[in-house]
Length: 250
Image (cartoon, rainbow, N blue to C red; front, side, top):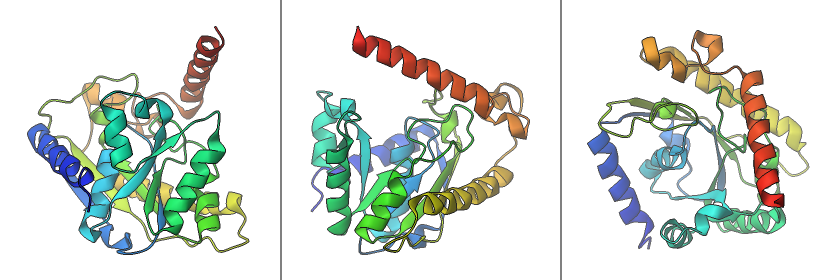
């Protein structure tokens, strides 16, 4: 019984209603009702894990998300994350996180991961890490391509927050499961995953209400928005990584 997870979801839904967020979920029936799976999600906002998890609710499933170790060290968030059986990721000791995720998958859990590793400032799909495909292959479970659109308008990097009553539409889509059989090339599987997610994302973007004026900051430059290009966003990410290393070494 999910003594903590279920009440947290109920609280989150109450917050979403207070914000007036309008969710459109497509493909929820692609989430398996039993057995393990790797839910691979694009990363647009600080709330992506709370939104993506909604797609698993119709199947009565809970998603165990892989999240930064620092969140688990927070005095309030940490105990909640552990109680909900989320998985801490220590970038200095990634093997332990991988083993824990693999064990969860083999025991029949859905594990949520962000193949881009960090949030996309361009709101485009960044290059994927191969970890999601590798976990699916090693645990003999499918990949669930999951895309969000609109989440960046609530709270993302370098853009204004809209955490009040905003009535923002948020699209969520789960694509057909992608098998990754034993012996599969994980790089090829990652490319199949990315292609599926790109197709879903394009469909969501085409159906989304038109953004104008200041809201163009939430739209990729490729689509006429004023968000940074992929190249400019990569330069900003590199700057952040350099600052983090300097702080760590100081």
